[in-house]
Amino acid sequence: MKKLLLTTTALAGMTGVAFADVSFSGGAHINYKTATGSADAAFSSDSNLTATMSNGGAYSASVGIGVGEAANAPGAAVTVTTPMATITVAEGGDLADASSTYAEVSGMTGMGSTENEDTDVSISASLGDISASFSSDLTMSSASASFGASGSLGGLAFTFGSENEDMGISLSGAALGGTIKVAMEEIGTASNSGVSIAIPVSGSTLTLNADDTSGEDGWSASVATTVNGASVTVGTNDAGTTTVDVSAPIAGGATFVADYSTAADSSEYGVSYDLGGGATFLLSHSEFAASKTDDYALGTNMKLSFAF
Image 1: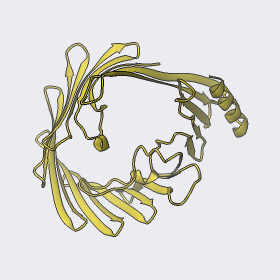
Image 2: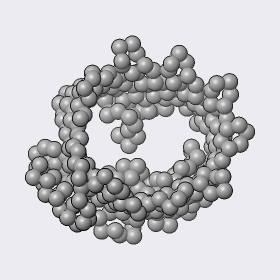
Image 3: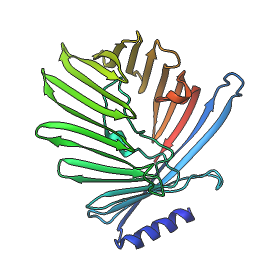
């Protein structure tokens, strides 16, 4: 707590802005993971605290820290918002790469990560209908730097990303009663391209994707619809993989989520229940490979979370 108060005081002093309103938010959870293979069953916990300051005008700032033993607590993440830009510095990394703004067509390589442990600095700014961003490590080295932009020009939406010598751009707009997107990227020595069409069909949305990635042609298709209040998406691709994603409310305020795939290590299931007062209980099971984790932690977990 002393570290948090000192940081917020120094932040206000550096900006020269008097922050009139200060609010606190945070969360904590206790998780129990059942035994898997040679690993024993074990409890784990985590908590965080964020202070948000505002002067009632165009300036605001927030400081977030992990709460725990000094040896395990991560460094603070500080975000400052001004009329010109938003700047975030996180000593522990895990910020999004600016290049991840680029939205590739399914099947293409893409670039950047939405949670990179080596990305500690993020700067973003809006210029009318265009948003631009920059990210890097704490040393601002060119090897870790990436750029991103998104917005609309002439009735078309675009996304752009660049890191090192890689780059990608996508354009999308209304067509055939739905949306069509075209993407192109240069990743290493490969020149990749793809097109995606999403159109409404009898209350559902049909999405067709085709790509040429590293000299190999690929395709995928999916149908998204609602059945008795449940959101259901069924998909397939050129590799013969079938996926079924379901999100459905359950009586009593619970929600069931299932992401099933015929591909190995690519399925997960979960039931969450809102206990009220910021408390949530989650029972989940994930078979995802460690490098492909999605919504839930690997294995079978019971998690009790609190937020304020």
